[in-house]
Length: 255
Image 1 (cartoon, rainbow, N blue to C red):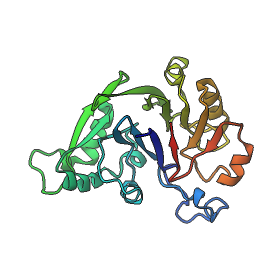
Image 2: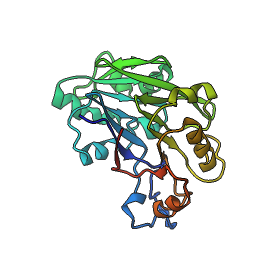
Image 3: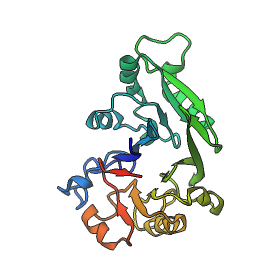
Image 4: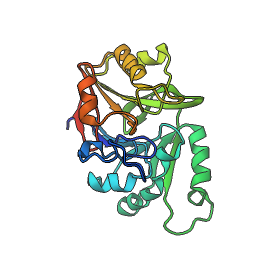
């Protein structure tokens, strides 16, 4: 089985198109400009995991015909990355197992508030069943497969990127230290967020993302978490350096 990443969603927190917006990007007829909230399906050394489960999780799972997962990895507690976890109920029902979720302690605390009904001692029948594993920045294993968390900052909020062998994935960040960039060095494929060309309080601008990508040095870099404040896919592609491409929903890349 070859390792791959499938981009389940490549949009920012409101997705594209935005409700009520009729800008050039939101009105684009190019399917590559129709973006669910950012998420990715990773198939790596025999495991199948999803990074982040936002409000579009159900549609993403149906579109890709995902029938089972070994785990869901969360990057941080924001709703556009955790808002779809109620829908793991379907996996619970089909597989008869709790859904393993890997996240930092602060994310777990957020889940306990957001999904309090799933953490009660006496639960209503049919609530989502989670098996939560708290992690930090040390490598951890799923079914014997090593995954390396990588620290970054989303304004003042610590977030995690992840490395799977030759793949690095970093979303929702506007700062990563030189030391942590080294943890991504040697990947063939690197995924990084950028929201627009202009500087942003909590996301890399395009130039900042390209600088991080240059320092990582991957053979191919894909941009994700794109907003409608940046060009359409077809136009943005023309301005990017060799080896850098805007990702789009349903794109599958082997690594």
